[in-house]
Amino acid sequence: MVKAVVAGASGGIGQPLSLLLKSDPNVTELALYDVVNTPGVAADLSHISSPASVTGYLPKDDGLKQALTGADIVVIPAGIPRKPGMTRDDLFKINAGIVQGLIEGIAQYAPKAYILVISNPVNSTVPIAAEVLKRANVFDPKRLFGVTTLDVVRAETFVASLSGSKNPSDTTIPVIGGHSGETIVPLFSQAKPAVNIPAEKLDALVNRVQFGGDEVVKAKDGAGSATLSMAYAGYRFAQKVIKAVKGEKGIVEPSYVYLPGVPGGDSIAKTTGVDFFSVPVELGPNGVEKVIDVVSSANDHEKKLLEAAYSGLKTNISKGVEFVNNPP
Ligand code: NAD
Ligand code: LMR
Image (cartoon, rainbow, N blue to C red; front, side, top):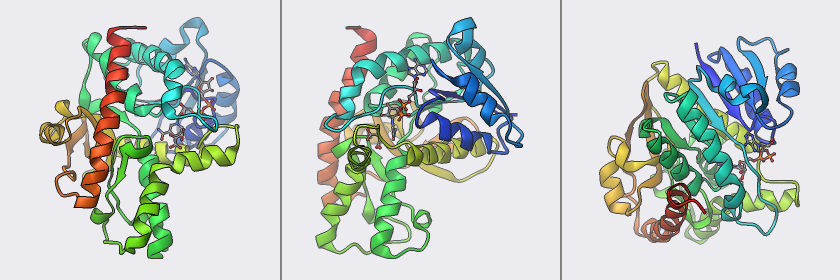
């Protein structure tokens, strides 16, 4: 029995993500929460002949409590998206409070749930989530994940155009660091199977992964940012968490986690100098089983990219921590 909750379920990501979760045979209950339109989205999805029962909640009538009670996994794509010319950090002002409020609800009504944060800026919203959970004395770092899977999906896709691979997702590429611009660091040297990237094409490839989000924001021309590819990526990560919790072994996917609180994280925190960082995570029945150190085996070119990532991340992380501990 798995109860999944989507918070922000009526949005551009929320709707297709809810559709994918509804189609997952492992999900038996799907609760949709948003400030608008969830009754309609839930009624629509509820006609699909898969196992999950679907319910929709609004803030009225204790909707957040109803949605979250009994949740095993909560996925959060709530909050505003970028428009051209904006950075993810520009979303902080509005999304920080939205994420804080939802995590307060989770701390109260579903403190054992696996929490998957999609809302931007992920580099700061995950530290906000951690601080809120700490304050409520329910923080389990093994259960809090910043979803950076879209960066991995992009790296797989973009490298396939060079390698000629017929199925891009057959190549595993660790993409580490954070989720914005130069904090995103793809480690192509550690691709499996190995990929041969011509030296003159490497910088452009790295740049495309780092700024893939901007490509979509620009193309949507004011109508938002990536939604469908994000729903795919969010579901891919959620599905892996659900499978691992159900006992499947050897599942690994990068995620932005609180390093000092997860097995294997301390030494990576020492090397990177940051507490929140995306690294390949081996998932298990309790969430993070261990994190895998791919940082120390990065090549010199990647180490240079990582230096830039550390400094950006430090600023983003302290902004999130400050928001909770010294509210504006
Ligand atoms: P959207 O505006 O289409 O949808 C957001 C939804 O959140 C809306 O339905 C809105 O009503 C809802 N919402 C607002 N406040 C809420 C609250 N307090 N509780 C519950 N729901 C609330 O936006 P979108 O395109 O779906 O993007 C959502 C977020 O995901 C943005 O912050 C975006 O930047 C981020 N995002 C992250 C990634 C990633 O890789 N992590 C990728 C794409 C987008
Ligand atoms: C992405 O990477 O597509 C998302 O973070 C959305 C954005 O603002 O670019």
